[in-house]
Image 1 (spheres, helix red, strand yellow):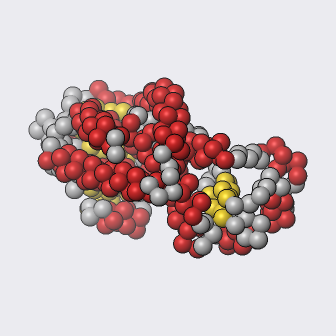
Image 2 (cartoon, rainbow, N blue to C red):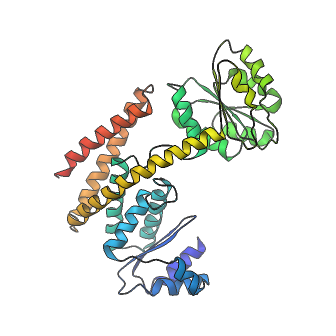
Image 3 (cartoon, helix red, strand yellow):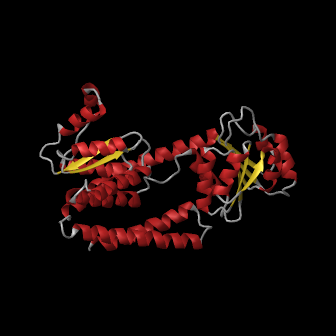
Length: 364
């Protein structure tokens, strides 16, 4: 953060307006109001980051005018990311612009550009399925659970392990409506910490069989060199479950759950290979949707630029943002009233509502 602020301060004399976007795999410097910025950026990077000129030439690119805005719209929509359609970049871009505006680095020109790229990016995300389909192992695990269970408010989720993957899964299950999360972990401090964060219950590893007896969904991700959920432990738990099915997800490497467990009646076991196949399928679908998103982005950007008078542009953006907020609020209420709806049914409703609103908004 200190280095970023130092760069912005150093560039202030050359660049009247500027935003610096820094993520784990990209650095983008967005500027307006300078006569010629082609030399400014490389010079500043050489001076303040001690980057060799040949390295800069290999990795540096620069866009001007509408080409630059088009690039930023692609970035915001997730079309320029390593994982097509990922949503994190839009939040990072928003943070960069909001920080620059608050700090006085970004003025009227970049604020208008910011509103334009948000309008285009949100339109692309809402009108295509570019962000649909889980692409992380923990989110795919939740996607699998949604295919098996119609609702989650009465389900018990057991997490075996207390690492990052279990934490992400706990968050995803909580968002689905799960209120009973239990944690089994070898380290009591870490296990209790994760359980408390989600209002759950901690079990020591010695009580694994007991915890399995009351669980509906089990996600295991430990660093154990040998399986800790064995055929015998699950068989013992199933005798006490009176025919209730048990859904097991093993995302550990090496495996936490013995393969023989899958042979037991009413036991459904998925491992990391199954999940990675689903991730690959979802990525392929996103790539197909990406072509449609690229075409839509071109259309929406032309519309925004054609009708973006200085006075009416912010009004249009404000109207669309307000309608989008209302749309999300009402859809959230609707989906909470119908927790049994499948993801496909929810997507169909969301697309229909979005299509109607876009048609209504088009004339204004």
